[in-house]
Amino acid sequence: MTDKVVIITGGSRGIGRAAALKVAARGYKVVVGYASNEAAANEVVAAIEATNGKAIAVKCDVGSEADILALFKAADAFGPLGALVNNAGIVGPSIRVEDMTAERINRMMTVNVTGSMLCAREAVKRMSTKHGAKGGVIVNLSSVAAKLGSPNTYVDYAASKGAIDSFTVGLAQEVAAEGIRVVGIRPGLIDTEIHASGGEPDRAHRLAHNVPMKRVGTADEIANAIVWLLSDEASYITSSILDVSGGR
Image (tube, rainbow, N blue to C red; front, side, top):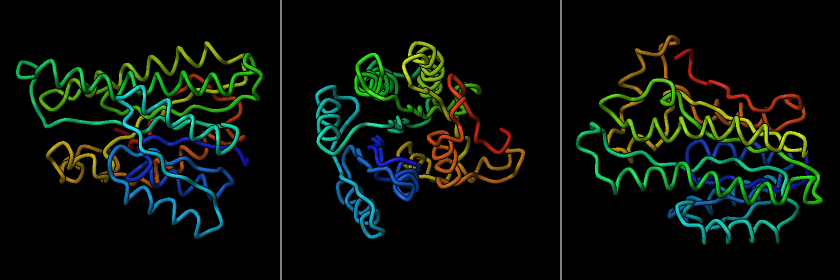
């Protein structure tokens, strides 16, 4: 693929981890962004280096602009930026809108929306031909929740991912003539730890019967889509959002 750098936010676990391992195997130098689990991030780096890849781990809560700037500064020292995977995101415990606090909603939007937009801002500065660079790819992780709305569960999360869908389309058209492709992926029910962080570790398997394929997806299946969208095989694809959801 390339010897350029890819930044993967939320790269220490789940989809981010799977993507980091797969893109490293295809020649990218990987910057593994992690919010708190340093041990998990270091394990991803070690796994990449064990197969002669190159990676570094950088602490970054994407809810903090200062952390985002530090993340990209570290990436600058690692090599020219070729791609960004906006993967970091949070959910909250299942709750109805009438019981939500402003604090919860603001945190959800700050991490899932503002964080992704600020990361994209920094990536565009480094990849756009307008700024003397050679282009690149931004992959934004959305969710099928953006289409389903997640009633009685987390409408705020669904709304944040709806914002990511709109942002993907708009940014893609904004930078399409500057060598940057911007695409999105909407995962469905995926077997990752994000459900545990929302208080329902068994959620994906419990709802699998609602999926036309009658099973949950894996982090590797999402990572495969990320790798393809980053590759030259997807060179004429921008402003598109790919559902990887088993038909849901």
